[in-house]
Structure formats: structure tokens, C-alpha cells
Length: 188
Image (cartoon, rainbow, N blue to C red):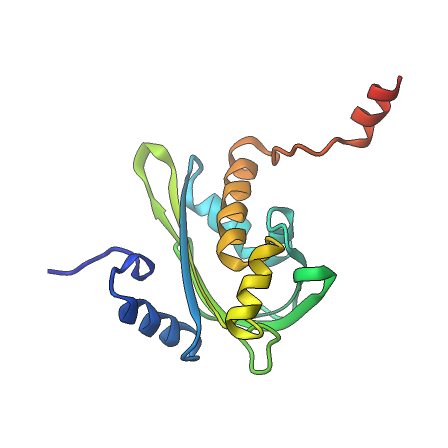
């Protein structure tokens, strides 16, 4: 019998580690997975995500993404303590409307790889699953520092998918921050 549960949910730590190593090619890589159901058609969600230059609209730590070609992109991402990390990424597998998989190029500040899958959820819309393997700079200490600054990929993946859902379902991302208009109104 085949198990279709995400590898990130395996109770076997070795299975999770082997999966991370397979994705990124690094023995010490961490593997995370997050899923959200979005009440929009699969093709629409895929098309928005596939336009990488739009990803910073909902990915909080992503400063910018420059498309170098149809399959290569350059990422600039905020790191703890105001630092920036950069890498080039290449799409290694793609299925229109269903899957985008990538791997960072050699020499990346944060070696990473992963996949985003889009599956129909019937009347509920689309199930979007992001699976990411990454090798945190400075190992466990780097991961701890990233968590303290809320920049750790597991935290960010959950928040980014939530913002993606809000953006796709409502056209905007809810925020507690005040706009300039609200501040002016409060002062009046």
C-alpha cells in the first residue's frame, strides 16, 4: 500500500532526513512542509506563483526576485539582524498548473530546494503544498538565531502561505500596520 502523506510528516526522523538530503543534496539539510487550501482555481494560483517577480507581494522576507531566464532566477532575501542573503535558483521540474520544483545554484548563501504543488480540492478550491529543504547558515546556531528574529523558513512558510491565501481570496493582505491615511485621520 502506498502512503501519499507528505514526507515532512513522517514519524521516522531518518525518512525526513533522507528526503531533505534527496531534495537539496546536503546531509544536514532541514525539511519543512506547509499546506493551505485556497478558494480559487488551481490554474489561477499556479499562474500567480509561476510569475516569480510577484512572490514578494506576499513573501515577507523576500526583498526581490529577478528572472534571469524562463528557468533561472536570482533571489534577495532578508536575514536576521538586517542582513541580506542571495542565491540563484533553477527550476528542475515543472508541470503546468500542478508543480514547480527548484534547486539553488552552487555557492548559494543558503543552499535550498523544494517544490510547490497545486491540487484540486473540489468545491473548496485548491490545496497548495510547499515543501522546502534548506541548509541553515551556521547550522543549529544559525537556525536558532533565525527563529529568534522570526526569519526561520518554517515560520516564514506558514506565514507566507497564509498571506498568499488572503491575497488570492480577498485581493489584499490583512495587516495590523496603519496606513499613512489612517495615521493622518487619527491626527485630525
